[in-house]
Length: 121
Image (cartoon, rainbow, N blue to C red; front, side, top):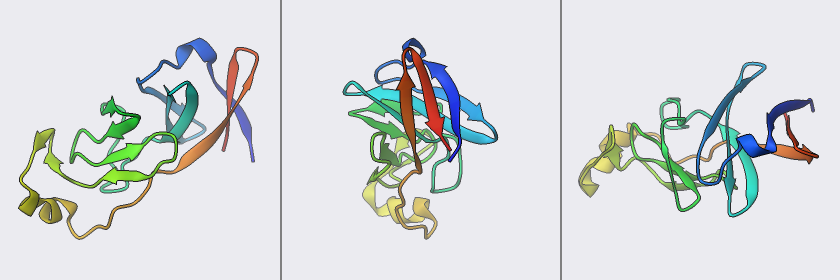
Protein backbone atom coordinates (compact mmCIF):
# COMPACT_ATOMS: atom_id res chain seq x y z
CA UNK A 1 0.00 0.00 0.00
CA UNK A 2 1.44 3.37 -1.00
CA UNK A 3 1.56 6.13 1.64
CA UNK A 4 1.36 9.54 -0.05
CA UNK A 5 1.28 13.08 1.34
CA UNK A 6 -2.21 14.50 0.69
CA UNK A 7 -2.61 17.72 2.72
CA UNK A 8 -1.59 19.66 5.78
CA UNK A 9 -3.77 19.08 8.81
CA UNK A 10 -5.13 22.64 8.84
CA UNK A 11 -6.23 22.31 5.16
CA UNK A 12 -8.89 19.77 6.16
CA UNK A 13 -11.86 21.55 7.72
CA UNK A 14 -14.79 20.24 9.74
CA UNK A 15 -17.93 19.44 7.72
CA UNK A 16 -16.42 20.65 4.43
CA UNK A 17 -15.00 18.77 1.45
CA UNK A 18 -11.46 19.09 0.14
CA UNK A 19 -11.07 17.56 -3.31
CA UNK A 20 -7.69 16.08 -4.27
CA UNK A 21 -6.35 14.09 -7.21
CA UNK A 22 -3.63 11.77 -5.93
CA UNK A 23 -1.88 9.66 -8.56
CA UNK A 24 -5.10 9.40 -10.57
CA UNK A 25 -7.31 8.71 -7.54
CA UNK A 26 -10.01 11.35 -7.03
CA UNK A 27 -10.47 11.72 -3.29
CA UNK A 28 -12.52 13.84 -0.89
CA UNK A 29 -11.07 14.72 2.50
CA UNK A 30 -13.01 16.00 5.48
CA UNK A 31 -13.11 16.13 9.25
CA UNK A 32 -16.26 14.73 10.86
CA UNK A 33 -16.79 14.75 14.63
CA UNK A 34 -13.06 15.47 15.06
CA UNK A 35 -12.02 12.51 12.92
CA UNK A 36 -10.25 12.78 9.54
CA UNK A 37 -11.74 10.82 6.68
CA UNK A 38 -11.14 10.17 2.99
CA UNK A 39 -13.57 8.75 0.42
CA UNK A 40 -13.61 8.33 -3.33
CA UNK A 41 -14.91 11.42 -5.14
CA UNK A 42 -17.30 9.36 -7.24
CA UNK A 43 -20.93 8.55 -6.52
CA UNK A 44 -21.51 4.80 -7.01
CA UNK A 45 -24.88 5.55 -8.64
CA UNK A 46 -23.61 6.97 -11.97
CA UNK A 47 -19.97 7.75 -11.23
CA UNK A 48 -20.54 11.50 -10.99
CA UNK A 49 -18.31 13.62 -8.70
CA UNK A 50 -19.38 14.35 -5.14
CA UNK A 51 -17.08 17.35 -4.58
CA UNK A 52 -19.89 19.91 -5.08
CA UNK A 53 -22.14 18.02 -2.65
CA UNK A 54 -23.07 19.27 0.80
CA UNK A 55 -22.01 17.75 4.09
CA UNK A 56 -25.01 17.12 6.33
CA UNK A 57 -24.88 15.21 9.62
CA UNK A 58 -21.54 13.63 8.74
CA UNK A 59 -22.65 12.53 5.26
CA UNK A 60 -21.96 13.87 1.79
CA UNK A 61 -25.06 14.38 -0.36
CA UNK A 62 -24.67 13.82 -4.09
CA UNK A 63 -25.59 17.07 -5.87
CA UNK A 64 -27.05 15.18 -8.83
CA UNK A 65 -29.42 12.53 -7.44
CA UNK A 66 -29.50 13.11 -3.67
CA UNK A 67 -27.81 9.90 -2.57
CA UNK A 68 -25.95 10.38 0.71
CA UNK A 69 -22.97 8.57 2.18
CA UNK A 70 -21.46 8.51 5.66
CA UNK A 71 -18.03 10.11 5.31
CA UNK A 72 -16.46 8.06 8.11
CA UNK A 73 -17.57 4.60 6.94
CA UNK A 74 -18.58 5.17 3.30
CA UNK A 75 -21.95 3.52 4.01
CA UNK A 76 -24.96 4.53 1.93
CA UNK A 77 -27.43 6.52 4.06
CA UNK A 78 -30.03 7.37 1.38
CA UNK A 79 -30.29 6.41 -2.28
CA UNK A 80 -31.43 8.55 -5.25
CA UNK A 81 -34.13 10.82 -3.85
CA UNK A 82 -33.56 13.98 -5.92
CA UNK A 83 -32.86 15.26 -9.41
CA UNK A 84 -30.15 17.93 -9.65
CA UNK A 85 -30.79 19.02 -6.07
CA UNK A 86 -34.60 19.07 -6.32
CA UNK A 87 -36.27 16.57 -3.94
CA UNK A 88 -38.54 14.17 -5.80
CA UNK A 89 -41.62 12.24 -4.62
CA UNK A 90 -41.02 8.74 -3.29
CA UNK A 91 -42.57 6.99 -6.28
CA UNK A 92 -39.81 8.41 -8.54
CA UNK A 93 -36.84 7.18 -6.48
CA UNK A 94 -36.63 3.80 -8.23
CA UNK A 95 -36.84 5.54 -11.60
CA UNK A 96 -33.97 7.87 -10.68
CA UNK A 97 -31.93 4.86 -9.48
CA UNK A 98 -32.08 3.41 -13.02
CA UNK A 99 -32.13 -0.12 -11.63
CA UNK A 100 -28.95 0.34 -9.58
CA UNK A 101 -28.89 -0.91 -6.01
CA UNK A 102 -27.56 1.20 -3.14
CA UNK A 103 -23.79 0.95 -2.76
CA UNK A 104 -21.14 2.33 -0.41
CA UNK A 105 -18.30 4.73 -1.18
CA UNK A 106 -14.73 3.49 -1.19
CA UNK A 107 -12.85 4.78 1.85
CA UNK A 108 -9.13 5.36 2.31
CA UNK A 109 -6.98 5.14 5.42
CA UNK A 110 -5.34 8.40 6.54
CA UNK A 111 -2.33 8.82 8.79
CA UNK A 112 -0.99 11.96 10.48
CA UNK A 113 2.67 12.71 11.03
CA UNK A 114 2.89 15.99 12.87
CA UNK A 115 0.94 18.50 10.77
CA UNK A 116 1.07 16.41 7.59
CA UNK A 117 -1.67 14.01 6.46
CA UNK A 118 -0.86 10.94 4.37
CA UNK A 119 -3.23 8.67 2.51
CA UNK A 120 -2.82 4.95 1.92
CA UNK A 121 -3.72 3.98 -1.64
